[in-house]
Image (tube, rainbow, N blue to C red; front, side):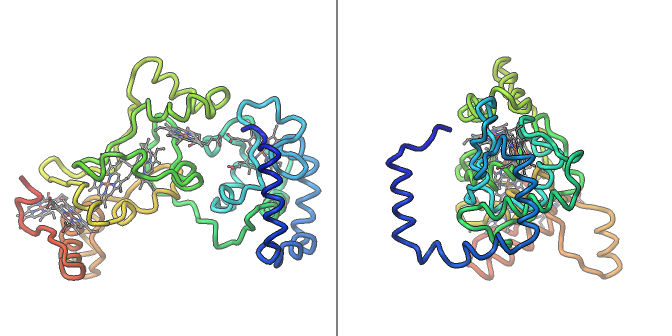
Length: 307
Ligand code: HEC
Ligand code: HEC
Ligand code: HEC
Ligand code: HEC
Ligand code: HEC
Ligand code: HEC
């Protein structure tokens, strides 16, 4: 990313002067007093500043050598939603642990767990807008989520960058299927982003060159004899997450769905657990509830779901 034009930076500086009441409270108070932040700052200067810059803006003396630039650690709009778990993983195990560029090395051999947390505390103190613990949303890991041919992270695309679900799943509003994005859609951004030094993104280029679709492994699926259309659900305003879970917090998409023996046994002994997603009981329970509460006209007759 190029440097911002001077006029823009001046305008930002001016607006900061004009609204001191918004910027001031607490801004100066915290960092110097917190011992973790202080210790983290010293470690940061030794290990991180060469790439990320003294002020954390991603403009250290080594930064120019990288195709994917060191992250601007002061940009709270992007970083604040990422939980400590994500930052710790990137710092200890390197960029590839989250699908990012190997230009970000792992520091597990140089920093203890405690020291890594101190660096994270310091990085948090750089954020603008200011970081509050409540902003970070925990990563959700679903047991049994399948390995995909490319490490595509919803946590980064939909969580950090807040790209709208329907920007990629474009069919959801107008058809039975939600649809997966084509390689061309990925290339719209990745012709440039990460193209030179991120091997996971290199894989997209490889599929594109060979004219192949990416063979994604399917996660959510109802049996062939069942009809599930996205369109009426999305148009009625049922959120994607109601049925799929907090996808924007997942590194790898997974779902605990369909009938299971353990669930049937729990039912048999009278524990009455709520129906598992994508079972018939789940569909019908929601249809009853929505018809009662929101005057929906969700079908309960067999042929609506079994043609
Ligand atoms: C050799 C250069 C280099 C050094 C040294 C380095 N980084 Fe990085 N860092 C990078 C690059 C390049 C990226 C961008 C990776 C990407 O976006 O694919 C990055 C990304 C990150 C990210 C991810 C941010 C995000 O938006 O997801 C964090 C956090 C981070 N670095 C923290 C640190 C810390 C803390 C240190 C010191 C312990 C450090 N880095 C040292 C090059 C470096
Ligand atoms: C609207 C732009 C956009 C689109 C479309 C897009 N990406 Fe990304 N992608 C990004 C940005 C921004 C990053 C972060 C790059 C970084 O920090 O290094 C990223 C990072 C990645 C990464 C590395 C981090 C991770 O997720 O593991 C992979 C792999 C990736 N994208 C794959 C894909 C694939 C596959 C598609 C198509 C299905 C796609 N992207 C579509 C913007 C986009
Ligand atoms: C940049 C493009 C992109 C964005 C934005 C995006 N997705 Fe995806 N989504 C994909 C790709 C590629 C896959 C296939 C790989 C995978 O399962 O991770 C996928 C898979 C899925 C799946 C699993 C499909 C299956 O196999 O059953 C669901 C559910 C899903 N996305 C929901 C969402 C939701 C909800 C959002 C918004 C919070 C969202 N996606 C945002 C690209 C995207
Ligand atoms: C009412 C529940 C429900 C809602 C709401 C919902 N889905 Fe689905 N989704 C499903 C079911 C059930 C399947 C499996 C369908 C099948 O096997 O035919 C599925 C499948 C998918 C798939 C796999 C591929 C495909 O095209 O079917 C993707 C991707 C997906 N959903 C994304 C989304 C996105 C994005 C949204 C929000 C815009 C969304 N879903 C809203 C229940 C839902
Ligand atoms: C979270 C709630 C919810 C879940 C779960 C749900 N539905 Fe629905 N469904 C609705 C609502 C609400 C409507 C009615 C929308 C309206 O009144 O326009 C609907 C409508 C439908 C329709 C009627 C479509 C039409 O064109 O009239 C079908 C078919 C359907 N759902 C199938 C399913 C199946 C199959 C499942 C389970 C795999 C399922 N639904 C799960 C809420 C849900
Ligand atoms: C709202 C949608 C919906 C309606 C209405 C519906 N079903 Fe289903 N049904 C499903 C789904 C989804 C499955 C597959 C998941 C499962 O096996 O639980 C299924 C599975 C089944 C199965 C296979 C069960 C098994 O154990 O393998 C039978 C048989 C069945 N339905 C019969 C019916 C009959 C009879 C009716 C009318 C009284 C009906 N369904 C109404 C959604 C529906």
